[in-house]
Image (cartoon, rainbow, N blue to C red; front, side):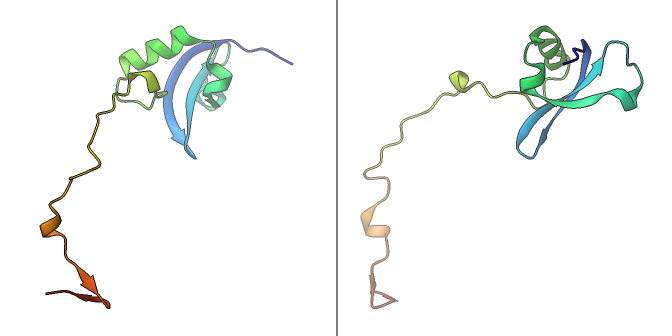
Length: 94
């Protein structure tokens, strides 16, 4: 298996729901030689990925599930029972 070195990460995108990076390979400067690669193929070049995202903060990036904060929402009494319409035989009860 041949090994190619990453020169620079040029872009990122979501393709069919998966993150991909546009890679410029060392020794292959022409745009048509760059390839879209899944994170699994370039995850080892974290410095290049971090550099890309620091200069392109709005570009698609991996989700850090540890950074997501959830809030507690009470599941009971979230509505006033008197405002919920009552139904009988497919008709709204009066």
